[in-house]
Image (cartoon, rainbow, N blue to C red; front, side, top):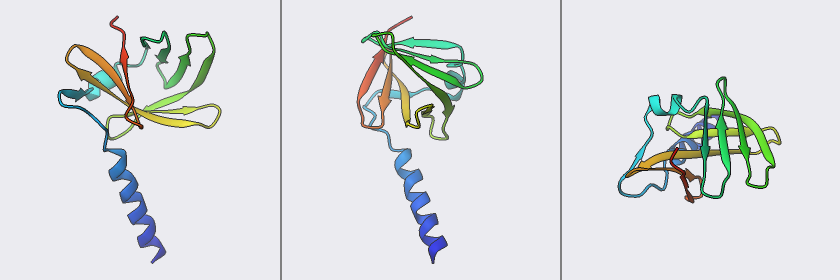
Length: 116
């Protein structure tokens, strides 16, 4: 019985992980586009920068100059999951909406990326 409950909880968790609050016209990045994040730095309109390094290292530099460090991985649902050194974790979904690249966080907040 306990095993059954654990399996049900895992299945429910997986189902909700794949439900992102996208809008009409949002197209999640392809596997190739997600793989191409390695070596890139994405700058947001608040001047924050997400840096995805080859090998899975990640850093976010705030406009103040402070930084947070961790590692990233690509989840099965196409989201980019970050494990920070301080123990915090989060997953984000990158989508193309027209010509814009947008990060959607788990709360549904949308953060457009500045064009390169």
